[in-house]
Image 1 (cartoon, rainbow, N blue to C red):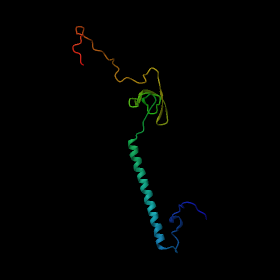
Image 2: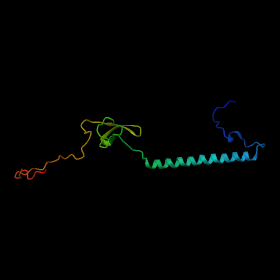
Image 3: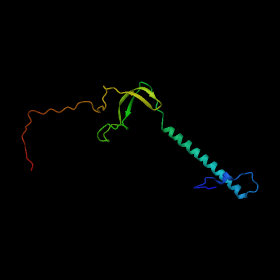
Image 4: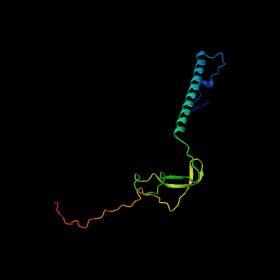
Length: 142
């Protein structure tokens, strides 16, 4: 038999428990390997269950319905120019038209909504200049 590379067979695959003529250390080695395999499998399953429990606690499933108002993330938008620091993380609130699965929605994009709403919509007022104020240069700095 020509074998290339690593042969993944362990002694547990080749030893049988019911053989009488095997050496006593070989049978105890097989029992030890069986215990190790069982313990490793149990430890991995416990770790997976713990990780799933922790992940489920911090990742609540969002409950969307048609007609709800939701913001749209700009994470994957590549057509917004300017510095990345100043880019908005989310755009407006849009109405959900339909649901596509648990996490994908179709929203209604309307032209009458502002794409980038202003944070302070009140206009800036310039203070009035007093008429009796002298407009002469008092001192020239060199």
